Length: 193
Image (cartoon, rainbow, N blue to C red; front, side, top):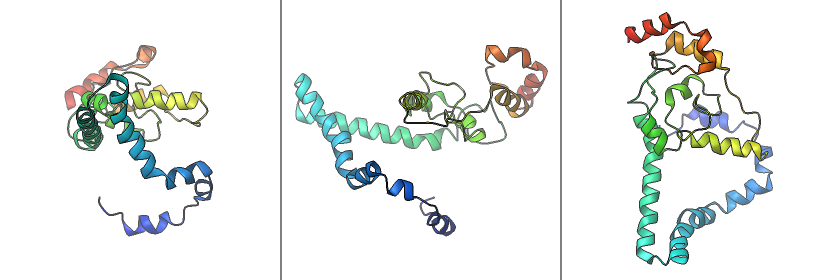
């Protein structure tokens, strides 16, 4: 997965990106990316402790580097650990699982079983905004501010039907869907795994 397939590169050149490339904010961000990244990711996190609570330069620098390394490794662990460990409440036939630890470390990106079954759901998890799904909270705030729109998600009945038909029986049924549940089917799937 290091190199893109030649067909992906060829077809990528045919995508009309004129609205993106003509947006002045995106053009400015692209030109200033490395300056902005250095400022927001490295300089501010080092200077804030020094300025506001008289921390030493090396302590502040080391803290920033540890935080940065932790954030990178937590993000990269999503595709590793969430594809290895975790239950499969929505679809037991696919490899990705639901992993609470990864979701906590990666701010809501550990719900891979749901994400692979419903990739078009903006939430990436059926939980909605919660402590384990901070990414959804951020998108909801952007929606409230008018920065995000056309947020798609499946209806709860579709999630229920998919979990009952293909899940491993570990999906927690929301109270409002309780009347629709066929517990014999869920028990059958749990025993079949």
